[in-house]
Length: 406
Ligand SMILES: Cc1ncc(COP(=O)(O)O)c(C=O)c1O
Image (cartoon, rainbow, N blue to C red; front, top):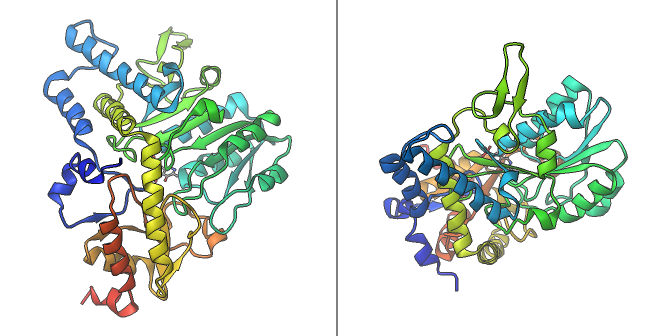
């Protein structure tokens, strides 16, 4: 039984903001006590650098840091040596793109992606398009952001070296057929690179079952600390790929002629002092989510999202962009009202949502607008909060939205 009341007790933010409805979980999530405590314990009694000291405090920090890697590996079902810690999805995606540049890609090669992607999943490839002569092509997506495997098959050809795609879209919540896309990529000798920023926090992710080559996700969107993230890669690919940051901790030796021998993965991707306390907190977040159960979280969110969607469908003043998607954000506009003004009205009623293009700046080519409001839920949200949000949405008019400024 999913006890949301009990779950909310884990989050000090609710006690500190009793009247707030927080529906901006796609941007970042609240942090539960086990995560806060893990970070605070490190500050209060565990502070030391990692992989550098011979004294007990430092060895303990090594154990905590490397222990987090084991927890993340369990969380996504891989080997701990396939987990490199980064600053977030953006850092991981940049590492993958620029790391693939010299090793896996040559001029004329094609990256196949979609127009629904977040900037961090497109811009690095656009730069490679300019700097190293690869080409970015798009698989069509339907009006709610969903990619159909037949369209991907039609878009596939032998110059494609990677399919790059978010498992769950950050605006429309479309869930892409990752397993089928991975099969398709591999049949053509290509790789699959998955942006898991909006999927890993919300559903079970089994990289082995999905046969994903590379996966990126952020800690702060899954109850973990900011400035943390994960780059997963199949071990032989991580070993072949180039790290984009060089420095301490990731080299085995170098000499004055400039010859450098790198450590093996994952250490070679962690140049410099890592975000130790963040990584320890991220490990605690994965452990916390696993203790509730990713399938339970997924089912609960599906149920709450369904409840929300049915109510939104009944609002005449609302244009609802993704009524059929089962999970993920509710994307909408109040008819005739600029998205930011409407979000301002919701804020005046104590409801936190995000408005704008949500970093998916070519999605408008599919949905016809680059301004939407996104209400994104997480495991701790409730039906009562949905009711409050729906009531406030029903009140949005040009007058009410502008009225908050006077
Ligand atoms: C689908 C998707 N990809 C990538 C990112 C970038 O994540 P971060 O800002 O944590 O690096 C986000 C953030 O909103 C996202 O939603």
